Length: 358
Image 1 (tube, rainbow, N blue to C red):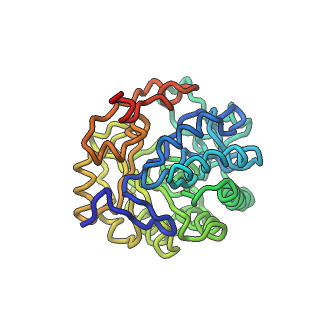
Image 2: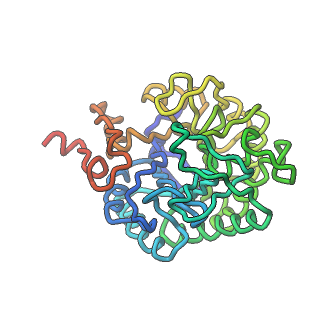
């Protein structure tokens, strides 16, 4: 049985351990969605991860409506990502870009555009009278073709920027998830209705990305169980199992699942996890995520449920998380107040072990 500290082949990427850094929005890019020098040090510090999955990175102006999140559609963005990937590689690490289209969750006050989704259903918000989202425009077939082109272009840009591959963000209620789930998608064309239609966009996006990067450098993230930012499904198994089978047939490098639980600390649900059934349908590396302890992570590797585990908030506070896990050293606690706060505080100033001992 593999240990978390054993190497693994994630497609063409050879990871020295199975402790993956999950994608984490940190809002340290410029208002124009260009990576900053702070991001070079942030990612360099975390190069000990088996693989770094970058923060969600916009594929287009239409698809990115979050303040100070980075993009990959402009030459200036590509150039600014290059020193980030170079720093990770010089430190011995590996990094893939997570490609992001927010769909109806793209705030118009940020993008300057009406949002786009599967259907004209406004996303909910915790404080309804302050809801920053608009009523989205249902994507036309031309919109879908343009979006596929945008994913292909962003993939080319990611490779030009030095990333080792890409991950398609198809989770958390964003654009692709808005097509997968019948709680949002009420289309009556080839992209709506039965599960085989609702997975069409995911399959087509993946095919376009593979055409640019190769299947062995293409990954996907899904969040199959429970409500995610207002996106839910009446029968998750009926849509996600066929989706996973399609991804397996396409030969992607790995699949990552963010799964909520009843006692989740960053989203919770009573909907059972689908990972056991997804494991049976997906023969390639499976990475599981959310609320894992070290012991629970190793147990899921021991059982064969997972091949690797990704951590998010622990990597925020512990840039040397792999070494802390390996040695049993105490963990720094993340400060949620600085997750999205501009500047270095809570970003590049968490101490590593040698700093803690000094």
